[in-house]
Amino acid sequence: MTDNAKNHTLGDKLMIELQGVNKWYGEFHVLKDINLSVRQGERIVLCGPSGSGKSTTIRCINRLEEHQQGRIVVDDVELTSDLKHIEAIRREVGMVFQHFNLFPHLTVLQNCTLAPMWVRNMPKREAEEVAMHYLERVRIPEQAAKYPGQLSGGQQQRVAIARALCMKPKIMLFDEPTSALDPEMVKEVLDTMIQLAESGMTMLCVTHEMGFARTVADRVIFMDRGEIIEQAPPEEFFSNPKNERTKTFLGQILNH
Amino acid sequence: MSTHVFKPDLPPPTLSVGVLGWLRANLFSNGFNTALTVLAVYLIWLMVPPVIQWAVLDANWSGTTREDCTADGACWVFIQNRLQQFMYGFYPLSQRWRVDLTVLAAVLGAVPIFVRAMPRRWIYAIGYLLVYPWLAFWLLHGGLGLQIVETSQWGGLMLTLVIAVVGIAGAMPLGILLALGRRSHMPAIRVICVTFIEFWRGVPLITVLFMSSVMLPLFLPEQISIDKLLRALIAVTLFEAAYIAEVVRGGLQAIPKGQYEAAGALGLGYWRMMGLVILPQALKLVIPGIVNTFIALFKDTSLVIIIGLFDLFNSIHQATVDPAWLGFATEGYVFAAAVYWIFCFGMSRYSMRLERRLHTGHKR
Ligand SMILES: Nc1ncnc2c1ncn2[C@@H]1O[C@H](COP(=O)(O)OP(=O)(O)OP(=O)(O)O)[C@@H](O)[C@H]1O
Ligand SMILES: [Mg+2]
Image 1: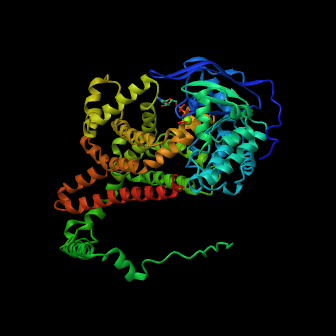
Image 2 (image 1 turned 180 degrees about the vertical axis):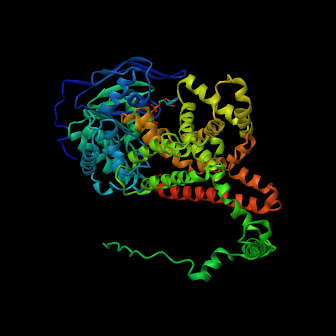
Image 3 (image 1 turned 90 degrees about the vertical axis):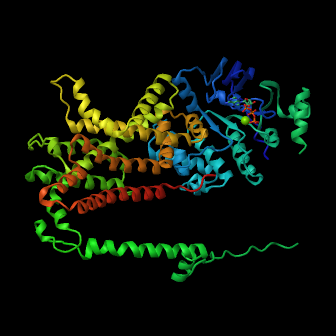
């Protein structure tokens, strides 16, 4: 893996800011006073045990989940129940899901051109050029005419990444993008993500791929039971975790 | 060190070869299937020859009155003699070309929609759907230079088609909106849609028609009179929309949450999410249910007999009680059944083709 993935300077601009965010599912307090700021070009890896609220956190950033207390500001727009703000933010924030969520009734190319055409009002021809550009970047331009159901999991996930990139987002969110994949396909998706990181994209990834975190992340955040327990640059995080919970967790996932 | 040598690709094995192979695989694969095959052949032999004897071999094909029906079989002279009435009802003879033209325009106008190579097919289709109803209404009803033909003169297959097509074309969009409304997050919209759907599903169509024709005028002031056919059309449309709504809702429920999330995360708003991502998938899933509803609707149009409209069935029924042709009810009803069957079977076949064409590989 290349070192130049880490050689980059962060912008001064805050792209994502969470201040005292709290969220409940009914009686259940999922997110407890989450504070997090992400600068432009920063790459953050979120990890933690199952059910700790990682998905919920990143899903709050594009309003797939609603927070009940605190402030979330994305690219200078505050997330409120105002639909205009929500749609404005979603245009600038791409998301990649664990289970790909490609649109099965559309071809790979149509999956990629749908949002640029209908949300950004891009002419069809231009949208297709953009789509082919990103499909080439994720190295599957030859699959453009196929339907998602005809692709392997790794290929589907790369299409999902290309689909998100076609909107030219400023921020990319990843929710365990490789955990539904066979080991052989994990690498092709991670390589795509590393390449994306090298291009300077602001990224927030929920993942347990610690190799990826080491190579790419500027900061690793550890969550447990709805709280941010610890955050540090990867070298420090892996070699010298401060918190007992973090140590146990790292012991568990690095030892198998 | 040895390198693995991959085996070459072989063609798949042929399980059944030729006619005999097909017969063995499909009709005589085991004792039970053989017995079923024999039984089926026996039943066919028992039933088909007499029917052919009656309907074709012994049938009377030409003539003008009942006296011409001398052979033992069916008297198709009766059908021939009344065919015009079965097709057009009491539509004035000199104006019937307008009905033919309406059908022709429908067919020719729709052809480009099914030519997949045509550019901007969707825009054309929407234009067609917006323009054609007005054209059809003008042609059938008249005005603007054409002689007015009151709807009370409409009848026969033409009236059946008018009711069925208007019912289908109106119930489909309304049903989709109701289905979406029933799943809306806004309580007011949800309550309205649920009430509407449950009301119409709770009453028989025959009651609805009866109320529209007999009871509605009692409540309306005397100077307002709404056309009887129009009332029937509205009743059929609202009634069927409730059914379509529930079929579509079934499809909507089958779409995984991830599809909504992916569409939302890309910035698609509610209507675009529904129109571009959710509905295309949901409607494809429920094609069988939708076509089922439409087939039932097509046949249910015959219920307009209760309010005195002369659709295909009622026209035939009236002809069978005409003293000049008494005793040929069987021929009349067989003919009616055949016409209904052709249309319903056509819809069924088309839906199967559509399903195959829209199939986009296996979900993973
Ligand atoms: N819609 C919901 N209703 C109620 N509880 C929920 C809902 N979604 C998630 N939860 C609960 O919230 C907690 C946090 O969920 P979340 O999906 O954020 O965890 P996670 O850290 O992403 O876990 P995993 O690694 O398993 O994906 C879990 O305990 C989960 O059971
Ligand atoms: Mg999760």
